[in-house]
Structures are given as structure tokens and as C-alpha cells.
Length: 220
Length: 223
Image (cartoon, rainbow over all chains, first blue to last red; front, side):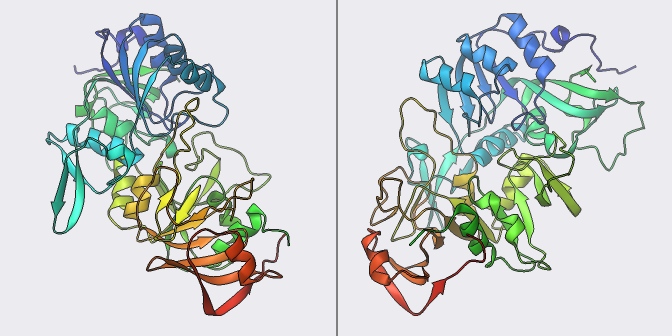
């Protein structure tokens, strides 16, 4: 019987190695997989590349990783959020290298990786500092930059409900980056509020089909 | 003459949003716009984090931590409002499905260039968010910002001094002193804060200006 449930957060992130790329869901607090990130902190792994829209709220697992110098590179669009004083301190102290990417380009680069594409041409940022060094191509009179796929070794996702096949539903704006991240990593670990029987999720409402999910942890 | 408050600027920008428009509001003064949209107009708000059809939370309403706008402020979903993921959200933005993006800015040039993501402070991480996607993807980009810096320096420039978000995209600017439209390398002054003159605006602006023949006084019902 197919059952993607795991018994612990450590089991959910098993296989994580130094130097890995983690796709971390959430937009601020909604959709941020707190328990799975705490397990990453406990794992001791470092030299990580983390793809996360924000730099982490005070006290979060992400900011603990950053403050202790275990995130080599943070790929993000808006690292410094209101009140995130710990991120500000870590950044000022040179604890993390920030690679700033426009928000919709982060998600589209992951979608590209998920869909098996080799890249895409984007008008975003053309002629600005964030497009420096990128290949420019003119199509029908308009300049575009070549954006490359962004794939993760491990995606950490927060969803609302799951079944044992790994089908997921989300809650309100906690969905955000989670579905695209779930589809763009070699291994996808999910924490959910509750597990339901197979067939109990409305098949029309499933936002992440179980094919993208490897491990599910119920955290409540 | 006292410049418009942030609330008054938000009120003025709200008057130009019409029934059926899909509108994205940036962080800062733009997210203050919703309560000032004239009653009865169904303006559908879009938020980068995956939501269409919401409004600000009333004073006594219960906060749902999973229901926030792009500024991470709690909001309320309206009947008909929907949620979707980030890839879909930016499909709406870059694909030209958003009618108006109202953005904050540090500077706008006379050619409609916008700079709103970094002031190059080495001790502080810059943040771009969805601004670059919105600036090139929305059908119309409008800016709300103070007319000058705290030190009195013009924010409407010949050329932006800060790194650009996008070149030549801004159509209209609501400042604390005036309403201006970008037209062929000149900013056309459409409205001037009541009690001020065109010369007053010229003195506080670096960009090339032209007075619209039908320029009107800028009046708001709130201070």
C-alpha cells in the first residue's frame, strides 16, 4: 500500500547533504514549513543554497541557519521583511550572500525546472542591474533576457491537508510558492495540518498532485 | 502649503480606479488605497502572493494568519475572491492581465523610468519583490510617492540616480503636491495642490515639466 507518511521531521529531510539546494516554501509566515526547517537546523548540514522569498523572521529555522553561517547563498526577492532584525544583523555581519531575483522570476525558473524546460526569455529586469551578465535576445523587436531553470535537491513545503498518496490542498495565501517548489525538487517533503483518508480530498481542489510529493509529515 | 498626507495621496490615486479593473497595489502608500476606492465600484485587487478579490480588514475583524496581502498585512477575501500559486500569480502579472499596477518609488524620471528597489545601502539587503515583474507586465504603471525627499530633493528627475526597476514604463505619478502624466520625455502637470502654483512645482522638480492647459487644483476630502 502506497503511503508517503513519515514519522518524524528528521525522516522527512533524510538524505540532505552539505552543499544542497533547498526550495523553501512560504511568503512570510503563511506556508512556511517551520517543523521541517527546524529539522534542517538540527541536521547540522551547511554550505546550503536556500531559495526562499524572504530572509526569515526572528527565531525561525531559516534565520538560525543564516545567523550561524550555514547558508552560503540565499536566492530571494525580498530578504528584509518588517521586524526581521535578526536577518538585518546577519546580513550586515556578512553571514550570507544574497542573490536577488525578481519574485516572479524565482517562481518561473522553478516552474521551468519542474516542466523539463531549458530556460525561458523574460522581459523582466532588462537593462537593470539584476539582468547584468545575462544573455539578451531580441524577439520581434523586444529585448528579453535568458533565465535558466532553478532546481532543488530538497523542497520543503507546508500544506493544509494530504492523503497517503501525497495529494495536497492548501489554505488561503499559505499556498504561494509551495506548489511550484513541490514540483521542482528531486525530493519533496511536506508538513501538513492533517492527514485524510484516500478519496476524502475533493479531486477538483487538489493543488499539488501526489506525483510531486515524496514524504508527508503531520504536524497539526 | 502643507503637502498631502500618505492617506490623502492614497485617496487621490483611488479615484482613478474604475469598475472592473484588475489592480495590483505595491508596498507603502499603494496598499493604503482600498478604503478610498469609491463605493459601488467593483475594483478587483490582485496580490503577488496568490490572491484576487480582497479588501482591507476592518477594525474588529478577526485576523487569519494565513490570509495576507503582498505587504504581509492581514486582509479579508471578498465573495468571489480566489487563491492560486505564485507561478499563476506572475502569469497574470507578466502576461498583461493586470490593468493597473500602483507602485511606490524613490524616483521617477521624465521618460517614465522608475527606481524603487534599492538605494545601495551596503549594510542593508535590497529587496525587489514583484516590482520588476509588475513594472514590465502590468498594462499601466502608476506611481504614488512624496514629491521630494525629506531633505527637499526632487524625486522627479531628468535621470534616476538610483538603480532602475524598469525604463520608460510609468504613465502617471501621484505626488504629495501634484498629479503628473508622462508624455514624450516631459511630465505634464494635470493637478496642483490647492494654494500652490506651477512655479512652486517647478522649483521642487528636476524633470522637464509642462503645464496642462486644463490643469486643475488638487483637492482631497481628507488631510
